[in-house]
Structure formats: C-alpha cells, structure tokens
Amino acid sequence: MTSFFYGIENLFVNYLFWPLDQLRYMHSWWGSNWFNSILFLIGAGAFIYWVIQLQKFGEEGQTWDMETQTYQ
Image 1 (spheres, helix red, strand yellow):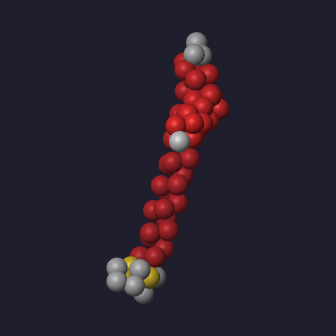
Image 2 (cartoon, rainbow, N blue to C red; image 1 turned 180 degrees about the vertical axis):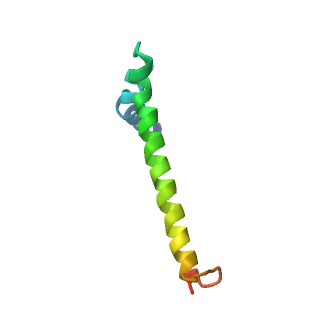
C-alpha cells in the first residue's frame, strides 16, 4: 500500500510540479511571474463570465429553488 502513495508522490513531485520548479529557479522576475499573470487573467475572465450569467438569469426572472435544485 505504501508503494501506491510513493507512486503518487513521484507523479506530483517529479512530473506535475516540474514546471513550477523551473519557474522557482529563474533569475528573471518577469519570466517567473508570467504564469501567475496568466492564471489571474483566466480567473478574472471566469469571474466576469459568471457575473454576466447571473445578470442574465436575474433579468429573465429565474430564481433558484433550493428544494428541487432547479431554476424556476
């Protein structure tokens, strides 16, 4: 069972987090922060999309029914 968890550790440490390790050891501030800027832009775009969708549902008079988990 422990080999399963060591396998998960190996996957994340050696493969999935490898790009972040490369960003950590860069000597350029601009080069290392492009990743954070892209994530921020994706999050801001998703937030704006979410607010627009909320406005559309509000203008149509639809409300969320907690009991049936549907819009009315």
